[in-house]
Image 1 (tube, helix red, strand yellow):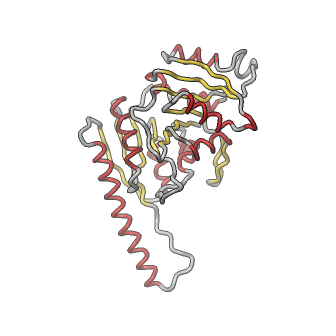
Image 2 (cartoon, rainbow, N blue to C red):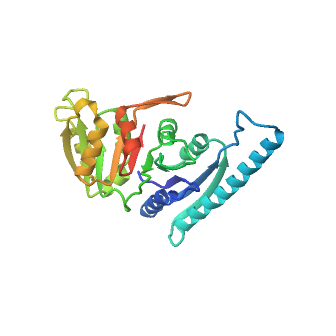
Image 3 (cartoon, rainbow, N blue to C red):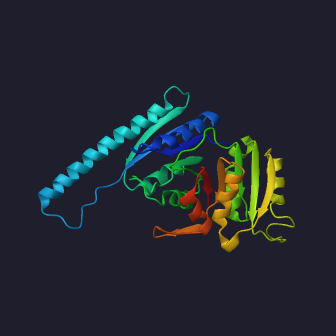
Amino acid sequence: MTYKTIVVHCSARPKVEQRLAVAIELAQRYSAHLVGVYVQEPFVAPAMLDGAAALDDLFAAHEQTAQTDLAAAKAAFFKAAKGTHVSAEWRSESGYVANQLGVHARYADLVVLGQSDPGSYDDAPSDLPETLSLSTGRPVLVVPHIGAKTPLGKTVLLCWNASRESARAASDALPLLRGADKVIVLSIDAKPSAGGHGAEPGADAATWLARQGVKVTVQRDFAADSDVGGVILSRAADHDVDLIVMGLYGHSRLREMVLGGASRTLLASMTVPVLMAH
C-alpha cells in the first residue's frame, strides 16, 4: 500500500500554506497525484432582514467574496505546486464543505486538512476532520494551525489500544511508518488479555509492524484521571515526534459528533500533525 491520490482542502486563508506544504511534500515522496479541492458554501440569509433589496445586496456581496476567495485559494494551490514535479489537479465545488469534500475523499488514499484555528476566522467547520474520518473510511491527516515540520514522519507516535480503530489507523499509516526512523507504539492503561493486548501490551503490534519493515519500540504508560489525550501529547513532546497516528473513536448521527476524550484533546491541542482513521 502507498498513497497515490492525495486530496488537500484548499481555502483563501493565509494558513492554508501550511497544509499545502505538507501535502506537496507527501505527493513528491510517494509520486502521488495531488487534488486541491475548494468548496464554496451556499448563501444563508439572516433571520432578520429589512426588505428584498437588502437581501439582494447581501447575496451580491456573498458572491463577490466567494469569487475572490476561490481565486485566492486556487492561486495558493498552484503557487505551492510550482517548481515541483507533482501531478496537480484543481477542483472547485459548491455546497457544504463536509459533504462535497467527502465525495472527493472517498476516491483518495489520504486527505490533508488544517486544524481549526479558534483565534481567527476559518472557512471550514471545526468538526471537519472527524466528520470526514467517520464518514469516508479514509485516513485524515490534520495539520496544526501553528504549522508543521516537513518532511514529516521521522519520529512517529502510534497510539495503540488493540481496538479496530487503532488497527485501522496503523494500517492506513503504513507508508509513513515504513519510512520513519523511529516508531513508538504507545499503550496507555493497557491490561494483558487473551482477546486484546496479549500478555505484553503493544508487543503484538510491534511484531506485526516489524514484519512490515517498521523500526519499532514499545512504551507503556498510565493516564491519571483518565487524561489519555494529555498523556499522548506529553509523550509526543518527550520524544520530539513529528507525527501522531491514532484511531478515531465515535460516531456521527445527524451531524452530531460523539468522540472519545483522547480524540477531542488531540484535535483541540495538537502541536504536531495527527493522522486519524476510523
